[in-house]
Image (cartoon, rainbow, N blue to C red; front, side):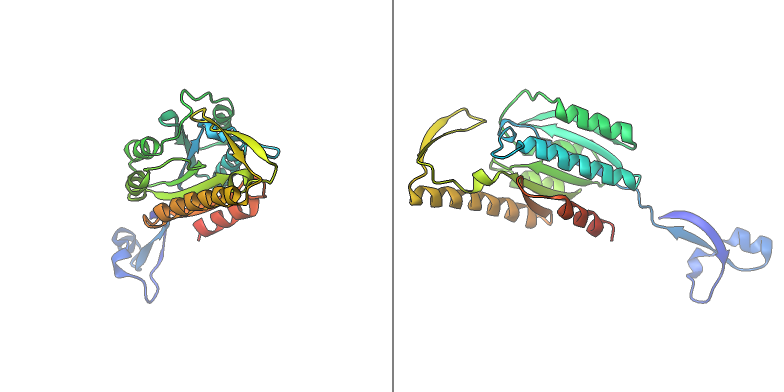
Length: 252
């Protein structure tokens, strides 16, 4: 709460807010009026690991993540909020301190577009731990990732205890469902391992689909049990209306 102005005392006002200096000068009771400070700090934690460079339609997952980061950042800027970023793989690749202004946001997006990560694997513990160390003041943190990793429960718990955490799970539709096209080579972008899968087998397709569903379910459970919000985004579908709704809820 920050001081706004003084006005004459009205019936029902809290007597603890009486401005005794003004009251003494005017011989009339005046109270201090406070307003809630609306300035917030937003942090964008963007996964730049190798699995982001996959896309079965027009865009890679990392490209969609960049678009979403831009939408979030410019929306925050419209309310004069600060925006910062942590770009990560299995380590913190780059930290951009939160600041205001369009030039700063453009700097974040430029660095995200031209980021060349040193590692291709994904690890969530280090970037979330870094967030809690580097930012003492509570912020709203969006984690944009495909969450193709394990063992990040404690990291989420650590960050959610201090910050308002939102997990944004990005996935390509081909990561959720396989087409029936016979033998198909699939390579893990992070480990480099190549496997051939018989997509003509219904059992194989169902197992693949179930594996994705289990991964998404794990992601949601970890965030929700730590009082963090979750959102799952199909990179082949429009996402703008969902993001607008998020900001409306955050402003109420």
